[in-house]
Image 1 (cartoon, one colour):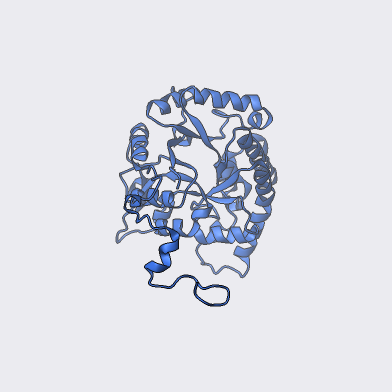
Image 2: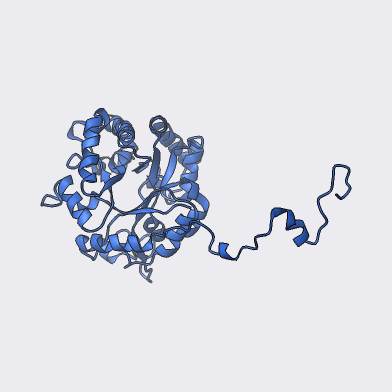
Length: 360
C-alpha cells in the first residue's frame, strides 16, 4: 500500500491582484506558511508561462527551485480552461471566448487549435518538471442535450463522443510520449461528468492507457452519485484527487436541477472542508486500500466561508485524514510459525500424492 501525498493546494481560486496572491512567489510563501507541501498550478500566465516551460528546461528548473526553497513541489499542472476550449458547443461560444487569447476569439476553429497547442505544450512541460499526472477538463459537445427533451435523434451522443475522441487522441498520444497521465475532472458542463460518460470516452479512445480521472467527490455528491462505489469501479484510473466538500439538501422546491438559483440558495452547493456531507474518512481509506499513487489537493469553493480560512483549515483537515499505511499486517505478531509443509496436516489431509497417484 502507498501513503497518499499531501496536503497540497490548487491555486486557481486564490490568485488575485493584491499581495501575496498576485505572484507565484507570494502564493508559495503563503501556502507553505499554512503547512501545504505541494501546489497544483493553473497554467495561467500570471503564475506560470506554459509556452516557456515547454521550450526551456532552465525555466522549469527555476520554478521547481523557487518552490523547493519553500518546502513545496508541483503536484500537477492544470489546463482546465484549455481543455474546455478543445470542444465547445456553439451555444457557449461567446461565454467561453473569454478563456481564450484575443487573437482567436470569435473564431472557434482557431480557438480549438490554440487549445490543442496548449495541451501539447503541457505534456512537454509536465515531462520537464518530472510530473506523472496532468489535470484538465474534457470540453463538451453533447452537454446541451443532457436531458432527453426534446427527444435526441439516434446517434447524436455517439457522434459527439466520437468527435471528442478524435480531438483528444493526438493529445493523449503526446501525453503518452511524455510519460504523463491525462486526468479528466468529471464535472457537470463537460461531456465527461460521471462514470457512464467516462466509460463512453474510454471506448471511443480504444481504452487509451492515458485516459484517467481527477477524482472530485463534490461533483458526485451533487449528482447523487455514489462516490465511494465509484472508487471501487474505477480506482485503477484515478490518478489525481481534489479534496473538496459539498452538501445536498433537497426540498419541496428544488433538487439536483436547482441550477438557476445562486450558489447560496441551491439545494446542492460546495462547502469548505469539514462543513459539508462528504465522508472523507471512507474516501481516504479506499484510496489507501487501492494504492492511489498521487496527491491529496485541496480545491476550495464555498459560498459561505472566507477562502483564507478555508485554506488554513483545509491543510490541517487533509493532514489529519492521510493514512500512513501499515508496513505489515496488524496480526503478524500472532502468526503460528508453521512451515508450508504442515498446511495439509492442518486440513486433516494426507501428504501430497506422487506421480503415480499414490500417497508418499
